[in-house]
Length: 288
Image (cartoon, rainbow, N blue to C red; front, side, top):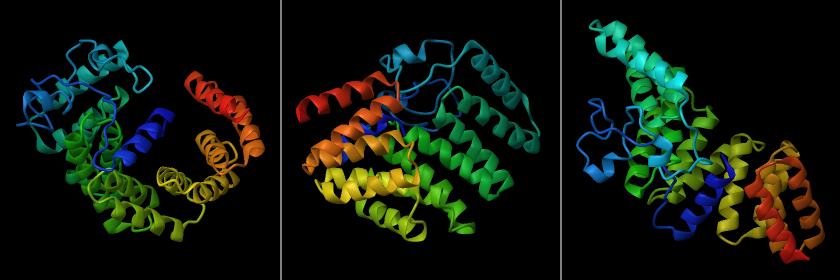
């Protein structure tokens, strides 16, 4: 999870009523396989992606830090994969090509569409890995949904795919953690928190669950508990930049200023992200 996503998650939980994410893709409404078929025109701009050669990044508001732009080569591969899929008449061939098309959409960072085609492939072939791939694509799209309605839709699709994974493999903790985060962004956040606690009970060193529980503790102003989560996290992974940053934040809030300063300075040596460096400098200025 990027720093911008983390900050969005924090703001969203603060509002408690809704979670809004930055858009990663924009949509051509002419796509006949649109995941959001039947939505209004305003909602369709957040739906199933179709490439038509226009500037997706500019149309999305120029959020260059939040998503990647497809290269000409990726757009060509996507057009080729889509043409092969559309021309195929044999069901088995289309199911095989659906996975190929999903990979092309994923490479172009159009994760809503990638999930749609990976889902077709998963339902045709079955298997934990196929459903996990579809769930991961929908989850990635979910993290950048532009409205609460869209987040609910994509979060629901991600859960649907992950449920197939967990049905066969309840110990797939990455899938369970992602399911938890979709619930936290919904009207039932406690279900997500309970799932995260289940993950920690099974794997006390699970980085993703530790991080997300730490973020939730910060949001609820439980900085002592947050510090405990983030300290454990960087013991597991000393190179976890965001974990180090939020441990410093937690310690600053609990009055452990010297240790917080040392950790903020460490963060600056761990990352070249100018936005993160600016945040660190703001905190250091407050602590000095």
